[in-house]
Length: 171
Image (cartoon, rainbow, N blue to C red):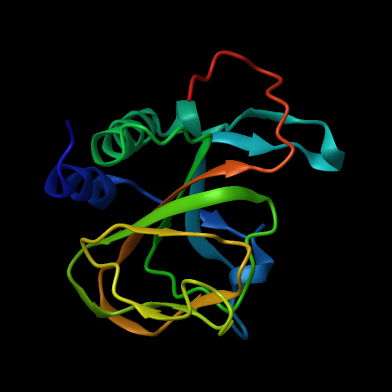
């Protein structure tokens, strides 16, 4: 069992790399986010999925996020976890996510609500995810409102058309 506080301690001691590969979540002149994916990642050119390089490079974060997700949602099977540090994502759609995702915000911050823009979406509107889990579909356009302070988000999801090429990673 992993509590919010225990998860936050692991996040705070993690040195998040610059991620220049997720252009769809950057705003204006931003060149990178502080984010990474553990678990499975989709391979280029539709070649299935494989273990993220971050599983080994950030072993404690990988292991703790898996336990944290299973603590909160023991019946939810997920393939990947995206962790963001201090990032207010631009309007975007999670194009490779399949089914429902779960997200939670941790840290000492104000603001930073997750907003779904499509009035036809069951998630339409603004959601405070600070220390609160939200079940949502990422294939609906969404963004993050500005915030102040230290904010981490952890997103659990499955990858569309993910043929697991490396069976070592268990859901």
